[in-house]
Amino acid sequence: MMREKLYKILDKNGYSCNGGVCEWYLPEKGKNNTWTPGKWMPKIKGKLVPCQNGYHLCRENNILDWLGESIFEAEYRGYVLENTDKVIVREVRLLRKCENWNKRTDRLFACWCIRDTPLFDGGTVWNLLTDERSRNAVEIVERFVNGNATKEELAAARDAAEAVVRIAMGVAASAAEWDAKWVAEWAAAEAAVIVAVGTVAGAVASTVAKATVEAAIAYAAAREREDDDVSHVVRDDVKKLQTKELLRILNA
Image (cartoon, rainbow, N blue to C red; front, side, top):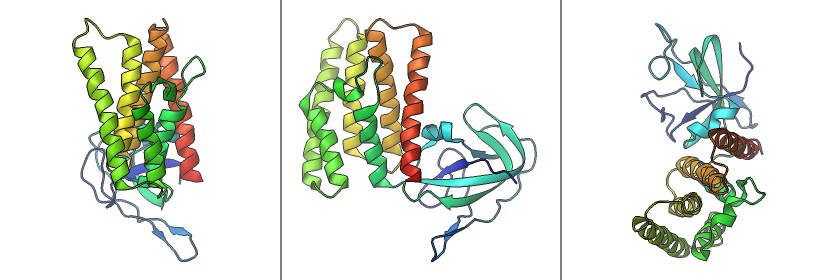
């Protein structure tokens, strides 16, 4: 039996959410806070094929790519097929639910991505928010999820942040071309809107994380660091830091 820590991302009802239709056997938490693993899922027959046949799990370094409403630690037994951002197996069971992951921590992690995703020159994506309305949206979300702001305040902050993006798009529509600096600032402003709008847990954080990665890459390009190698380095470095923070939340 494998001991490597792997994860399965499901919707709030225990169904697959990243492709396929499958109801999973869920682990149960006892009164003493210990977990009883779910039953082993039915063994997959036939050849394992990524995205077609087999149970798909992800490792820690890829968890950011698959975020959803519910995160479970899982284990497999038997043969495993390695893929770029996942592993495919025949037999799997869920060990425990990562209870620290919910709508609140999803949005707080998204806010962290905006505040703390680094830029190559020592700044962060927060510095790309040049309009106070965008920053205010992030601050209101942080207050809201901690019970210190009303729904009305959140809605007003969201509308103001959306106005910033609409204005930016209007300016871009009349421009001959989009420069990298504008792309970086727009991606950051769009991230602020997404975190303020909010949807199901996982969707916010995943979308904002990607937007802030793109902002960091565009910012590097704006500073004449446009080569592909630098873009890959920026993407990889930023995703590693974001993943580290996400795992800290899950294991807190």
